[in-house]
Length: 257
Ligand SMILES: Nc1ncnc2c1ncn2[C@@H]1O[C@H](COP(=O)(O)OP(=O)(O)OP(=O)(O)O)[C@@H](O)[C@H]1O
Image (cartoon, rainbow, N blue to C red; front, side, top):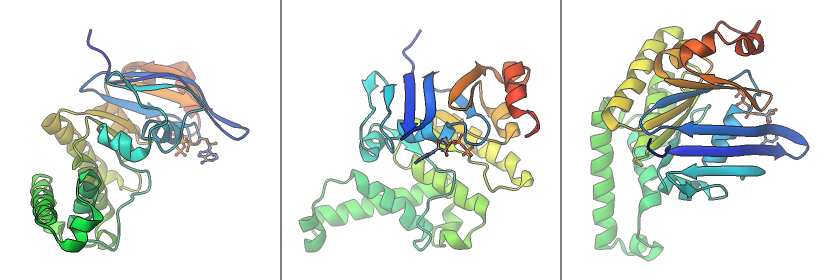
């Protein structure tokens, strides 16, 4: 069997006296769509913040494609090809959609402040390349019509698509989606599911998603992990999770699984 793309061993995290995660273990196979679910405050976003370098784990290891990445800064982890989106969309609302895509690319550039001030050939060439590839990306994602709009003026569903497109502009091999359906109406859910399927089929990447909308999770994921109070309570296929007594108990009174 091939090595997992992401392996998390005994991940534990404390915020001061608060034990947010205890002994979380995960293996993501290359190319799969996996889900991470659990009631509010269970620790899901903390897992993503640890994997993407926003927090340093108290204990445990996070291994991407054989390389230990815990403790690395977020930009280093992005360079190692982990992309992410956030529960509350984090686009620059006063910059156009096109500029939002372009600015993500600047983290990869090799020019110096001197290049920028002297408007050097290298600077101009890089800027043109970034601009052209951002247009290409927006066309590919069917977002070109919104390229010159400000995110704050766009419907929430389009903002969400732009945020996902921006994460993909950095060419990740693992994409973390933190509640992509948050804020969407139930009628937008089918469109989101199709969009994520299209991304998965087109780019062949591994996707790990946190989601409260069970329709999204159960339709897209081949494997689901459930956490409650910072600990894993179940792991399995959608069918296994739906019928797991511990999961039903954790969600009892909250929502249908
Ligand atoms: N930066 C922080 N400082 C202190 N406590 C935190 C911090 N971030 C999260 N927590 C706490 O850690 C626990 C897990 O939070 P986390 O946001 O990971 O849960 P979650 O499962 O993503 O919840 P939700 O589904 O509501 O987004 C909660 O008790 C939360 O209050």
